[in-house]
Amino acid sequence: MSDRATIDHLTKRISAHLRMIYPGHDCDMLADNIVHRFWPNTGRMIKRRKIADKHLWNESDVAIITYGGTFRADGERPLRTLHRFLKTFIGQTMGAVHILPFFPFSSDDGFGVIDYLQVDENLGDWSDIQGIAADYRLMADLVINHGSSKSAWFQQFLSDEAPGKDYYFTADAAADLGQVVRPRSHPLLTPFRTVRGDRHVWSTFSTDQLDFDFRNPAVLLEFIEIIRAYIDHGVRIFRLDAVAFLWKKIGTPSINLDETHEIIRLLRTLMDHHAETLLIITETNIPNHENLTYFGNQNEAHVIYNFSLPPLLTHALLTGNALYLKRLTRSNPPALTGCTYLNFTASHDGIGLRPTEGVLPQGEVDQMLAVIQGFGGRLSMRRGPDGTEKPYEMNISFFEAMQGTCDGPDEHQINRFMAAMTIMLALEGIPAIYIHSLLATPNGYEEVNVTGHNRAINRRELNYDEISAKLTDPATVEAQVFTRLLSLVEMRKKQQAFHPNAVQFTLALPEGLFGIWRQSQDRKQSIFAITNVTKVEKTLSLADINLIAGDTWRDLISGQTITDIESDFSMSAYQTAWICNGLELPV
Image 1: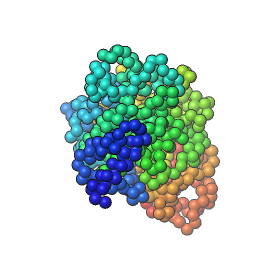
Image 2 (image 1 turned 90 degrees about the vertical axis):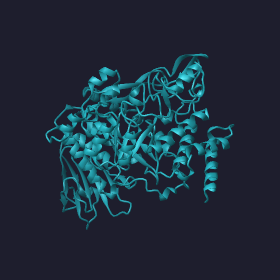
Image 3 (image 1 turned 135 degrees about the horizontal axis):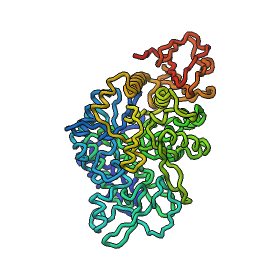
Image 4 (image 1 turned 180 degrees about the horizontal axis):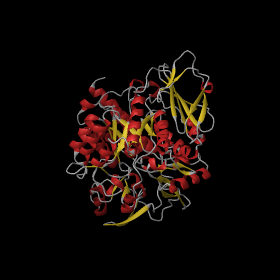
């Protein structure tokens, strides 16, 4: 296909997407506009990759999640300090880095973006971002649903000046918005005095984070240009923040609407035709059956967050009951070619509770909330359709969440934490580790008190010299957790059975044991990843997991060789075994 034919074919595909989003507009002209904005240099346009031909990830892919300002050193830009930490302590053990919003902002630690095309000068500049992108696969946030009230666009909205005057979603204060699904408890509409009089702006997340109006195609064009700029600066993975709320319609829940899915399909088409290998990951913290729809038909997100994992994993380790975790892993369908899950235990946000709806009985939820609060955690609330408030997420350092069980704190904190992380590392998908989990950071009560925001409890800034000293002192908790985690990651990266799309089957095991069977895509390697989620010793009958006679079986983690495949295998409190028929031994 010639360059002209490729352009014509792509323009028609884009126009087809646009007709689903903007009926009544001149979609052919809009498609042509998109092509020229996204590919000012058509040499970076390619024929669409066939899904089956894509090698987007493998078992060696592991991501680290961090803020650009997590590490602070006198006289050094925080982004350069972050890069120094990555090169010194991480190396290539984790090859992808998600830097949370690094733009000028007015609220929510970066998610109230003032200027999408600049780097916050308090962190560094684009050269610092590009330096990290040269060494790591860089993931960045496209904060696409809302922007800051302090932005130039919103000031134009207030003064009725182009282009921002038509960029924000407004509604009549008397409109019936009772069906709207809310992630927060403040009023949905925020009043502003403008030159056109009082106007009420849709504000899903806060009164400073104001929702864009994607019914205006010009807003879509702005974000397509922003995406192109990020690509030019080295971003290769795009996290679509809060994208489920993108399209609004009065009289509907205004979440997961068809137009939202079509916009994601459009962005997928653009990225699949770019010369760089680009990925979309959708941040949709909603019940699991809704979250799964963002795979589309292999034509929306490449990756979706496994949002159900953190709360159900937390519940399993706090209660010693893996029943609900097993139900999750049994019910999650295998991701199709070109799609996978992002597995994590914690993030910059809290441990979300919406994915537990209809999954975890309310009594179990209430028990978990009480335990987390007893461990110093906080609860963030949202408002339901009936106007009542209910917990939306648990705010706590994940290491602190693992300090005990429903019986209270105990001596098993590190091993319990490691059990949770090891389960996560073994699951189908790509693992991502939040920086404060990697460093076993305690709860940040001072940060909560200073900011007044519960989420600040797990968003601490660290002195680089102090954390460096702790990581090089084997006696510290930070060093013990960090060393064990990196060792597990390195071991995981060598196992083809841990490919993100390798077979996964949940094992039927006795109470207190959680296990999955993973098999490599060539069917040569099998790993039985089994964890004791309790604080007492458990016995695994190896006959129950049907190890194949004739193979040599060993636990990769302990190095123990299994000589009798029908014997009993003793597992201490919170021990994990990766029982493997491969030849890879721990280093």
